[in-house]
Image (cartoon, rainbow, N blue to C red):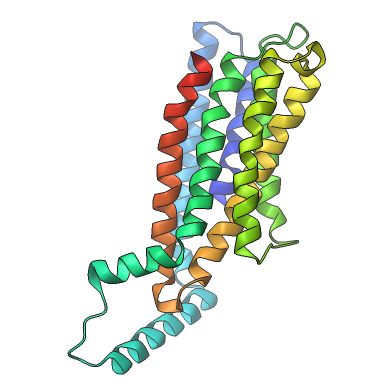
Length: 249
């Protein structure tokens, strides 16, 4: 939950500190102290929650189910056959490769646009330096909404989810239109709407695919599938960060 709310919390703090503190060295020092204090507090809460989660009945139940499934797999395979190691890792990766590709595309697209494009390339005569702060806050709020929407409706078809990830490539020409298109597209409303849609789709599709990946393999391998999914996510983050320089330059 801390991870889900991190972006919204950071944006809220940025709005608050900009509103109440002067934009000078003294104000920036106070802002930094507040950020560090809240960050340390959230870390402590996260550590406590992590240690408490391991004691929850639902966690213990699924841990027992996983151990039982792993034991049954070992009994079926026999003592002389090895099913672990790199071979198992590659089989799991093969099972979730399209889901992994979707996760990669989500973050490659998102990080190549946000926050570099938002903070460097768009400007507002009305909102001035509040404009990028507002856009970042809007993105983070809708990202949280998207992640929460899976509790209401969850796409269960992996092909549909991956196709939606590919469709997010359309954000590139749309955001280019906000830079170099007709005058209306270079105003605050289209940019704000697109930024919120970017966050909403990022949050929702991430949650959907992160839920699908562990379910695509036997339960005893679900943890490994989750780790592989995070690897695809990290690759997408890295690739998107590199591509974001295209917008800045």
